[in-house]
Amino acid sequence: MLTGFRYRLALTDEQAERCAEYGDICRAVWNTALDQRRQAVNRWRRGHDQPYCGYHLQAAQLAEAKTEETWLRAAPSHILQQTLRDLDAACRQHGTFHVNWRAKARWRPSFRFPDPKQITVERLGRGWGRVKLPKLGWVRFRWSRAPRGTIRSATVSRDGAHWCVSLLCEDGEHTPAEHALPDSAVGVDRGVAVAVATSDGDLFDRVLQTPKEHERERRLRRKLARQRQGSNNRARTKAALSKLTGRVRSRRADFAAQTASVLCAKNAVVVLEKLNTKGMTASARGTTESPGRHVRAKAGLNRAILAKGWHGFKLACVNKARRTGTRVVEVDPAYTSQTCHPCGHVAADNRESQSVFRCGVCGHTAHADVNAARNTLSRGWTSSLPG
Image (cartoon, rainbow, N blue to C red; front, side, top):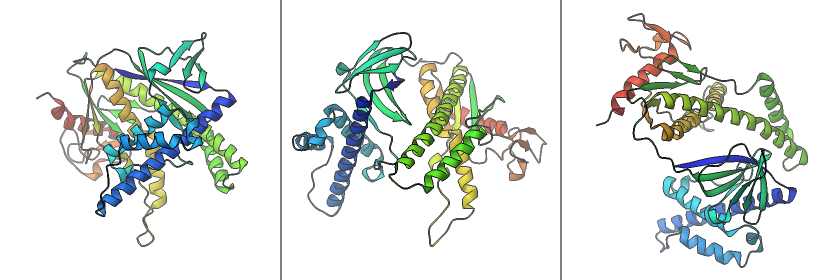
């Protein structure tokens, strides 16, 4: 089973400059290769004879370009080839015109070393280790835990003001054929007021950002909007904002991982609502000809949904299910919050408030999110049975 081990790097100034340069080169290779693919598709659509623009053709062109362009030689060849492989996989999965450009202002620099023979890891002491990477040499990192198994690759990425390395290892473990509690199941309702509510009546939530942090983020974003593009003051403000939001992201990921671990350890089946988070958090601004309605209220709801990390929680459940043998099932979420679980009566008036559910027919009263989770479980339990 493949497992990732992530560590914070302690780069020297020279190594930090090299990592930033490698990230810029990989971004340029990605954008250039994506542009070539799109132009090739357009020429083919217009009826021109166009050879397939895939990984092998672009890898050969990259090798030729490295002999002429000196700036490409600064980066190791393996990470550039891996960038082309990642682009090829993304185009095959999503389509060439649905793959995003890597914009300098929005993309977090990262690059992967795919050859395990060129990666060496050593422990230096109780809290420090070092990893040897091509052209970077020995790089120190915080030894928070020991990597297990055989190293397959190493990915260097920047998270805010820090650089991190993620070691992908084959630990030799396998997904259990059966869960320890094969007859157990739980339904999950993801919400805004409470992040996770289960059909067992448990409510999982966590304060991810304190009021003072929220106020500081608001001030930094307002300050950033007033500063000139490319100025040193704007760069310092972006660094401070990135450091602040990075702490929130870490808390969100930690909460998702811990909650998923609890649910998957206790249940053989975890039933989730099939939510299109990207569509649900789309802007309501509309167009010039057809302006949107209730834009500010929709923007607030979008921020609340993204703050709870609905998609990240689903990914955490899928990841943890590999260790426990749990099955993650998704069902249609329509009317789960308006349906009475005992009698099945559906009405918008059943939900008196955000947290109170009271059936207008049988009088059943429960926490609204828990009632929705029980309806989710009822829809998913039958489809999750074998055969």
